Image (cartoon, rainbow, N blue to C red; front, side):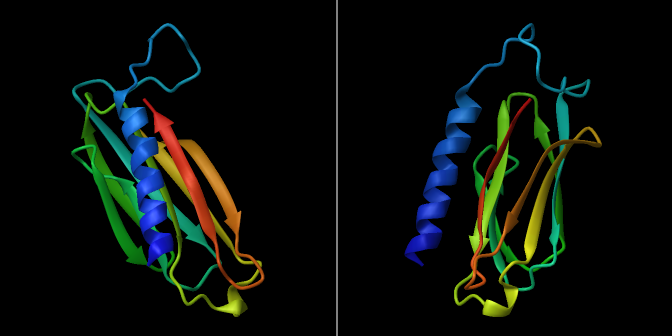
Length: 138
């Protein structure tokens, strides 16, 4: 339980830092936001891992939301343009299963229907996996 609280706190700090940043439109290196006043984002988590995961992601109001789930998992959220950055991370739910050792989990973030971020993690010898926060700034 303490590990889950630590993960949620860490993700909250990262997301709040991203949400408070303003991106200069001339700096390049980012995908331009979709037109209009909304940004459609899809989180997709897939892989061969079979244990439950606790996923923490940016909620529609730029706060945090979480879900305990198995793979595959997807979630589509429409954010207002005042949300400058989003993210997703998580970890395996304890007790883990050693049979999941070496199995993988891939996280993808789609913005406007295009993959803008991706990350793959592998479970350790005990079947435990920590999914580093995958941030995206619009």
